[in-house]
Length: 386
Image: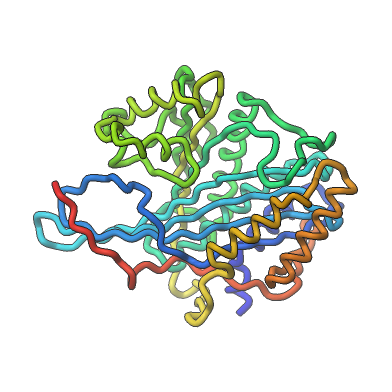
């Protein structure tokens, strides 16, 4: 089914990279997991009524290579939460939320100077429109924690003289520009000819930093802070993602009564976001264009959910971060890339080739569609106390 294949994540990435300056060829490899139950993103939330909730998560790694050498990568985790609540009216109310957390973005320094990573992020954001095909949602939450580190995905790439690294302030500014561009791109490249809105809202906050007037453009309205009222109880609304300073702080029992404002104040004096560090939290709502029943591609109901279990995905990361991986020079980067590509082939990960400048996209073999999360059959019921 050609229409279904075009929904593969790699094709969204390829469509974005294709717009880069002509004369380059990239290979895109996407590794994603099966959908697995995980803990709620608001594990300490207090509910007023009977509530049943379940969250599924998928991990995604996108690796881009050029001339058989990895040049960029992005890792993200996607969460789908189904909540069923019975209020005073005794009528069940169901809500579905999808949130994507970009956890790592990195380069090796082995590519020509161009906005490669910005287009990689834009393509990934555009790929989230796939959720409109199966879930009745109007937006996907986008989240990330910006913290300057010399390397995230490619071992010893910090020593590569061609790699450009950014300090705290420049990284935060880069992420704001990148998200602004990526959100605008994703809204313009929805599955429908027109998006459901021409404007969205994004949030940025630097713990301990002074409130700033953030520049807007025609598609993204920027606001300072978290996307919650300052007086709201943090445990009831602030999402807690894996390996995140907010999650680690809210895990402390004494934080139960904290407001969102108090949470930001305490982050500003903590070890991860304070003590001379300058970090930022970004959140945004990406509008999702609803796919019409007539035009929407049909998913193969017998398709396997993803390709790797969480355990196998972790094994793959062990190979990528292994002691024999070294991206500090062009020669070593090529050798390490070859080792990783051979491993990916052994677990049946193919590549999608794209030539920049508007030329055609080709694939080693038809990519399987990454099916969206389906929680309807595995809702766990919990009775919350008031």
